[in-house]
Image 1 (cartoon, rainbow, N blue to C red):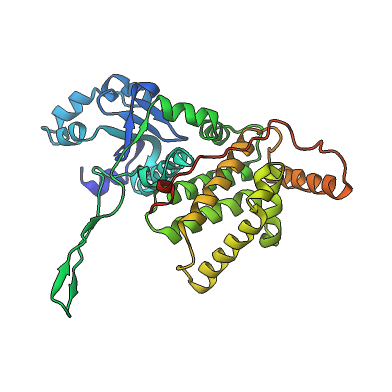
Image 2: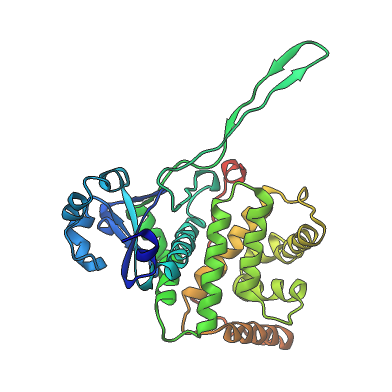
Length: 348
Protein backbone atom coordinates (compact mmCIF):
# COMPACT_ATOMS: atom_id res chain seq x y z
CA UNK A 1 0.00 0.00 0.00
CA UNK A 2 1.40 3.40 -0.96
CA UNK A 3 1.80 6.22 1.51
CA UNK A 4 -1.00 8.19 -0.15
CA UNK A 5 -3.34 5.21 0.06
CA UNK A 6 -2.47 4.70 3.72
CA UNK A 7 -3.03 8.37 4.55
CA UNK A 8 -6.48 8.30 2.94
CA UNK A 9 -7.56 5.07 4.59
CA UNK A 10 -10.06 5.49 7.41
CA UNK A 11 -9.16 3.88 10.72
CA UNK A 12 -8.18 4.37 14.35
CA UNK A 13 -4.79 6.01 14.64
CA UNK A 14 -2.52 6.34 17.66
CA UNK A 15 -0.11 9.23 17.40
CA UNK A 16 3.23 8.89 19.20
CA UNK A 17 5.32 12.06 19.24
CA UNK A 18 8.80 12.54 20.67
CA UNK A 19 8.76 15.22 23.38
CA UNK A 20 11.73 17.17 24.67
CA UNK A 21 11.99 19.49 27.66
CA UNK A 22 10.00 17.19 29.96
CA UNK A 23 11.15 14.61 32.49
CA UNK A 24 8.64 12.10 33.81
CA UNK A 25 9.28 10.75 37.30
CA UNK A 26 7.92 8.34 39.88
CA UNK A 27 5.82 11.20 41.33
CA UNK A 28 3.47 10.92 38.33
CA UNK A 29 4.04 7.20 37.78
CA UNK A 30 6.07 8.02 34.65
CA UNK A 31 3.06 9.34 32.76
CA UNK A 32 0.93 12.47 32.84
CA UNK A 33 -2.37 13.53 31.27
CA UNK A 34 -2.53 17.19 30.33
CA UNK A 35 -6.01 17.49 28.83
CA UNK A 36 -6.47 15.28 25.78
CA UNK A 37 -2.80 14.47 25.45
CA UNK A 38 -1.00 11.86 27.54
CA UNK A 39 2.73 11.91 28.14
CA UNK A 40 4.27 8.52 28.86
CA UNK A 41 7.76 7.20 29.39
CA UNK A 42 8.88 5.21 26.36
CA UNK A 43 10.32 2.61 28.76
CA UNK A 44 6.91 2.05 30.38
CA UNK A 45 4.78 2.32 27.23
CA UNK A 46 5.14 -1.36 26.15
CA UNK A 47 3.49 -2.57 29.37
CA UNK A 48 0.83 0.15 29.33
CA UNK A 49 0.11 0.23 25.61
CA UNK A 50 -3.44 -1.16 25.84
CA UNK A 51 -4.61 1.77 27.95
CA UNK A 52 -3.56 4.03 25.10
CA UNK A 53 -5.36 1.96 22.46
CA UNK A 54 -2.31 0.07 21.16
CA UNK A 55 -3.26 -3.61 20.91
CA UNK A 56 -0.25 -5.05 19.04
CA UNK A 57 2.87 -5.77 21.09
CA UNK A 58 5.35 -3.01 20.31
CA UNK A 59 8.26 -5.40 19.99
CA UNK A 60 6.32 -7.29 17.29
CA UNK A 61 5.64 -4.04 15.44
CA UNK A 62 9.36 -3.28 15.48
CA UNK A 63 10.24 -6.76 14.20
CA UNK A 64 7.64 -6.51 11.47
CA UNK A 65 9.40 -3.40 10.16
CA UNK A 66 12.87 -4.97 10.20
CA UNK A 67 14.17 -2.70 12.95
CA UNK A 68 13.27 0.50 11.13
CA UNK A 69 11.43 1.74 14.25
CA UNK A 70 14.13 0.74 16.75
CA UNK A 71 15.72 4.17 16.76
CA UNK A 72 12.39 5.88 17.46
CA UNK A 73 11.56 3.76 20.51
CA UNK A 74 15.10 3.67 21.92
CA UNK A 75 16.10 7.28 21.31
CA UNK A 76 13.14 9.12 22.81
CA UNK A 77 12.44 9.01 26.55
CA UNK A 78 9.07 10.81 26.61
CA UNK A 79 6.27 10.30 24.11
CA UNK A 80 3.04 12.22 23.60
CA UNK A 81 0.13 9.87 22.90
CA UNK A 82 -3.14 10.81 21.18
CA UNK A 83 -5.78 8.47 19.75
CA UNK A 84 -8.06 9.59 16.92
CA UNK A 85 -10.37 8.01 14.34
CA UNK A 86 -10.61 9.08 10.71
CA UNK A 87 -8.44 9.51 7.65
CA UNK A 88 -4.84 10.28 8.56
CA UNK A 89 -4.73 12.97 5.86
CA UNK A 90 -7.54 14.81 7.68
CA UNK A 91 -6.34 14.43 11.27
CA UNK A 92 -2.52 14.45 11.31
CA UNK A 93 -1.95 18.21 11.31
CA UNK A 94 -4.75 18.71 13.87
CA UNK A 95 -3.17 16.17 16.21
CA UNK A 96 0.24 17.82 15.95
CA UNK A 97 -1.30 21.22 16.69
CA UNK A 98 -3.20 19.74 19.65
CA UNK A 99 -0.01 18.33 21.15
CA UNK A 100 1.87 21.60 20.71
CA UNK A 101 -1.00 23.49 22.31
CA UNK A 102 -1.16 21.18 25.32
CA UNK A 103 2.60 21.26 25.79
CA UNK A 104 2.22 25.05 26.02
CA UNK A 105 -0.42 24.49 28.70
CA UNK A 106 2.05 22.28 30.56
CA UNK A 107 4.66 25.04 30.25
CA UNK A 108 2.19 27.38 31.99
CA UNK A 109 2.66 25.31 35.16
CA UNK A 110 6.01 27.13 35.51
CA UNK A 111 4.23 30.41 36.26
CA UNK A 112 5.47 31.35 39.74
CA UNK A 113 7.40 28.08 40.06
CA UNK A 114 10.90 29.51 39.65
CA UNK A 115 12.91 32.14 37.87
CA UNK A 116 12.12 32.43 34.17
CA UNK A 117 15.82 31.91 33.45
CA UNK A 118 15.39 28.34 34.74
CA UNK A 119 12.24 27.54 32.76
CA UNK A 120 12.14 24.57 30.41
CA UNK A 121 10.50 24.47 26.99
CA UNK A 122 8.30 21.38 26.51
CA UNK A 123 8.39 20.78 22.76
CA UNK A 124 7.31 18.29 20.13
CA UNK A 125 10.89 17.66 19.04
CA UNK A 126 13.27 14.76 19.46
CA UNK A 127 16.12 16.85 20.83
CA UNK A 128 16.13 20.13 22.77
CA UNK A 129 17.65 22.60 20.37
CA UNK A 130 19.77 25.57 21.33
CA UNK A 131 20.74 28.30 18.95
CA UNK A 132 24.21 29.80 19.16
CA UNK A 133 24.96 33.43 18.47
CA UNK A 134 28.30 34.09 16.82
CA UNK A 135 29.53 37.66 17.15
CA UNK A 136 32.70 39.61 16.60
CA UNK A 137 33.44 43.15 17.79
CA UNK A 138 36.50 44.84 16.28
CA UNK A 139 38.05 47.90 17.87
CA UNK A 140 39.28 49.46 14.65
CA UNK A 141 40.97 52.37 16.40
CA UNK A 142 43.19 50.30 18.70
CA UNK A 143 43.15 46.98 16.86
CA UNK A 144 41.49 44.95 19.61
CA UNK A 145 38.67 42.46 19.31
CA UNK A 146 36.27 40.37 21.35
CA UNK A 147 33.96 37.52 20.36
CA UNK A 148 31.09 37.21 22.90
CA UNK A 149 29.44 34.07 21.48
CA UNK A 150 26.50 32.84 23.52
CA UNK A 151 23.88 30.09 23.64
CA UNK A 152 20.24 31.06 23.27
CA UNK A 153 17.21 29.22 24.51
CA UNK A 154 16.67 26.94 27.49
CA UNK A 155 18.10 23.45 27.55
CA UNK A 156 16.73 22.16 30.86
CA UNK A 157 13.78 19.83 31.39
CA UNK A 158 10.61 20.40 33.36
CA UNK A 159 10.77 17.59 35.91
CA UNK A 160 7.28 16.41 36.82
CA UNK A 161 8.43 15.50 40.32
CA UNK A 162 6.97 15.80 43.83
CA UNK A 163 7.91 19.46 44.18
CA UNK A 164 6.30 20.36 40.85
CA UNK A 165 3.19 18.26 41.58
CA UNK A 166 2.67 19.83 45.03
CA UNK A 167 3.13 23.34 43.65
CA UNK A 168 0.48 22.64 41.02
CA UNK A 169 -1.93 21.30 43.63
CA UNK A 170 -1.41 24.18 46.04
CA UNK A 171 -1.42 27.06 43.59
CA UNK A 172 -3.42 26.77 40.35
CA UNK A 173 -2.33 24.23 37.73
CA UNK A 174 -4.02 21.05 38.99
CA UNK A 175 -7.36 22.79 39.52
CA UNK A 176 -7.08 24.54 36.15
CA UNK A 177 -6.70 21.18 34.40
CA UNK A 178 -9.68 19.78 36.32
CA UNK A 179 -11.81 22.64 34.96
CA UNK A 180 -10.53 22.13 31.40
CA UNK A 181 -11.24 18.38 31.51
CA UNK A 182 -14.75 18.81 32.93
CA UNK A 183 -17.92 19.49 30.97
CA UNK A 184 -19.90 20.47 34.08
CA UNK A 185 -20.14 23.52 36.36
CA UNK A 186 -18.29 25.97 34.09
CA UNK A 187 -19.54 27.59 30.90
CA UNK A 188 -17.90 26.25 27.73
CA UNK A 189 -16.82 29.72 26.57
CA UNK A 190 -15.17 30.28 29.97
CA UNK A 191 -13.27 26.99 29.67
CA UNK A 192 -12.15 28.06 26.19
CA UNK A 193 -10.88 31.41 27.51
CA UNK A 194 -9.09 29.66 30.37
CA UNK A 195 -7.46 27.20 27.98
CA UNK A 196 -6.34 29.93 25.59
CA UNK A 197 -4.98 31.99 28.48
CA UNK A 198 -2.94 29.02 29.70
CA UNK A 199 -1.54 28.46 26.20
CA UNK A 200 -0.49 32.12 26.03
CA UNK A 201 1.03 31.99 29.51
CA UNK A 202 2.97 28.86 28.56
CA UNK A 203 4.26 30.53 25.41
CA UNK A 204 5.28 33.54 27.49
CA UNK A 205 7.05 31.38 30.07
CA UNK A 206 9.18 29.75 27.37
CA UNK A 207 9.86 32.80 25.22
CA UNK A 208 13.36 34.29 25.19
CA UNK A 209 12.07 37.43 23.46
CA UNK A 210 11.17 40.01 26.14
CA UNK A 211 8.48 42.01 24.26
CA UNK A 212 6.87 38.80 23.01
CA UNK A 213 6.76 37.33 26.54
CA UNK A 214 5.24 40.60 27.76
CA UNK A 215 2.58 40.62 25.03
CA UNK A 216 1.51 36.99 25.57
CA UNK A 217 1.12 37.69 29.29
CA UNK A 218 -0.84 40.87 28.65
CA UNK A 219 -3.25 39.19 26.25
CA UNK A 220 -3.76 36.33 28.73
CA UNK A 221 -4.65 38.79 31.51
CA UNK A 222 -7.10 40.66 29.27
CA UNK A 223 -8.61 37.37 28.12
CA UNK A 224 -9.29 36.30 31.71
CA UNK A 225 -10.62 39.60 33.02
CA UNK A 226 -12.23 41.64 30.25
CA UNK A 227 -15.14 41.29 27.86
CA UNK A 228 -15.86 42.59 24.38
CA UNK A 229 -16.94 46.20 24.65
CA UNK A 230 -14.99 46.91 27.84
CA UNK A 231 -12.75 49.94 28.02
CA UNK A 232 -9.75 47.82 28.95
CA UNK A 233 -7.60 50.63 30.38
CA UNK A 234 -10.39 51.33 32.90
CA UNK A 235 -11.74 47.86 33.59
CA UNK A 236 -8.47 45.91 33.84
CA UNK A 237 -7.29 47.60 37.08
CA UNK A 238 -10.79 47.29 38.52
CA UNK A 239 -11.01 43.54 37.79
CA UNK A 240 -7.55 42.92 39.23
CA UNK A 241 -8.62 44.95 42.27
CA UNK A 242 -11.43 42.46 42.86
CA UNK A 243 -8.73 39.89 43.72
CA UNK A 244 -5.94 42.03 45.18
CA UNK A 245 -7.55 45.31 46.30
CA UNK A 246 -7.76 44.09 49.89
CA UNK A 247 -4.00 43.55 50.23
CA UNK A 248 -1.51 45.98 51.73
CA UNK A 249 0.46 45.85 48.47
CA UNK A 250 -2.44 47.23 46.42
CA UNK A 251 -1.76 50.78 47.57
CA UNK A 252 1.76 50.42 48.97
CA UNK A 253 3.07 49.04 45.69
CA UNK A 254 0.87 51.35 43.56
CA UNK A 255 -0.76 48.46 41.70
CA UNK A 256 -3.46 50.52 39.90
CA UNK A 257 -0.90 52.95 38.47
CA UNK A 258 1.48 50.14 37.48
CA UNK A 259 -1.33 48.27 35.70
CA UNK A 260 -2.23 51.39 33.72
CA UNK A 261 1.41 51.93 32.77
CA UNK A 262 1.91 48.40 31.50
CA UNK A 263 -1.32 48.70 29.51
CA UNK A 264 0.07 51.88 27.92
CA UNK A 265 3.22 49.95 27.03
CA UNK A 266 1.08 47.19 25.55
CA UNK A 267 -0.73 49.72 23.33
CA UNK A 268 2.54 51.30 22.19
CA UNK A 269 3.92 47.85 21.38
CA UNK A 270 0.85 46.69 19.45
CA UNK A 271 -0.01 49.92 17.65
CA UNK A 272 3.38 51.60 17.25
CA UNK A 273 5.82 48.70 17.44
CA UNK A 274 7.64 50.26 20.40
CA UNK A 275 9.55 47.28 21.79
CA UNK A 276 12.25 49.24 23.62
CA UNK A 277 10.03 50.34 26.51
CA UNK A 278 9.36 46.79 27.72
CA UNK A 279 11.47 45.87 30.76
CA UNK A 280 11.96 42.58 32.62
CA UNK A 281 10.21 44.08 35.66
CA UNK A 282 7.07 44.52 33.52
CA UNK A 283 6.95 40.81 32.73
CA UNK A 284 7.69 39.86 36.35
CA UNK A 285 4.82 42.11 37.51
CA UNK A 286 2.46 40.53 34.97
CA UNK A 287 3.55 37.08 36.19
CA UNK A 288 2.53 38.11 39.71
CA UNK A 289 -0.87 39.38 38.56
CA UNK A 290 -1.58 36.29 36.47
CA UNK A 291 -0.50 33.95 39.26
CA UNK A 292 -2.94 35.56 41.70
CA UNK A 293 -5.80 35.92 39.24
CA UNK A 294 -5.51 32.30 38.08
CA UNK A 295 -5.10 30.86 41.58
CA UNK A 296 -8.22 32.65 42.80
CA UNK A 297 -10.34 31.94 39.72
CA UNK A 298 -9.68 28.20 39.65
CA UNK A 299 -9.69 28.01 43.44
CA UNK A 300 -13.25 29.37 43.44
CA UNK A 301 -14.70 27.51 40.48
CA UNK A 302 -18.23 27.55 41.94
CA UNK A 303 -18.08 31.30 42.46
CA UNK A 304 -16.77 31.90 38.92
CA UNK A 305 -18.53 29.40 36.59
CA UNK A 306 -18.42 32.01 33.82
CA UNK A 307 -16.75 35.30 32.98
CA UNK A 308 -20.10 37.04 33.52
CA UNK A 309 -20.00 35.94 37.16
CA UNK A 310 -16.46 37.29 37.51
CA UNK A 311 -17.56 40.66 36.11
CA UNK A 312 -20.61 40.64 38.40
CA UNK A 313 -18.29 39.91 41.36
CA UNK A 314 -16.16 42.93 40.44
CA UNK A 315 -19.21 45.18 40.11
CA UNK A 316 -20.56 44.15 43.53
CA UNK A 317 -17.22 44.96 45.13
CA UNK A 318 -17.27 48.34 43.41
CA UNK A 319 -20.77 48.99 44.79
CA UNK A 320 -19.65 48.05 48.30
CA UNK A 321 -16.78 50.49 48.07
CA UNK A 322 -18.94 53.35 46.74
CA UNK A 323 -21.59 52.82 49.42
CA UNK A 324 -18.97 52.54 52.14
CA UNK A 325 -20.46 49.36 53.56
CA UNK A 326 -18.55 46.54 55.25
CA UNK A 327 -17.09 44.04 52.74
CA UNK A 328 -19.27 40.95 52.34
CA UNK A 329 -18.89 39.90 48.70
CA UNK A 330 -15.23 38.88 48.65
CA UNK A 331 -14.79 35.48 50.35
CA UNK A 332 -12.12 35.13 53.03
CA UNK A 333 -10.54 32.33 51.00
CA UNK A 334 -9.31 34.77 48.32
CA UNK A 335 -5.51 34.54 48.46
CA UNK A 336 -2.57 36.81 47.81
CA UNK A 337 0.43 34.88 46.55
CA UNK A 338 3.53 36.99 46.95
CA UNK A 339 6.76 35.58 45.61
CA UNK A 340 10.12 36.45 47.11
CA UNK A 341 12.06 37.94 44.22
CA UNK A 342 15.81 38.07 43.75
CA UNK A 343 17.93 39.72 41.02
CA UNK A 344 17.84 36.37 39.21
CA UNK A 345 14.11 36.76 38.57
CA UNK A 346 14.82 39.86 36.48
CA UNK A 347 17.46 38.21 34.32
CA UNK A 348 16.57 37.60 30.69
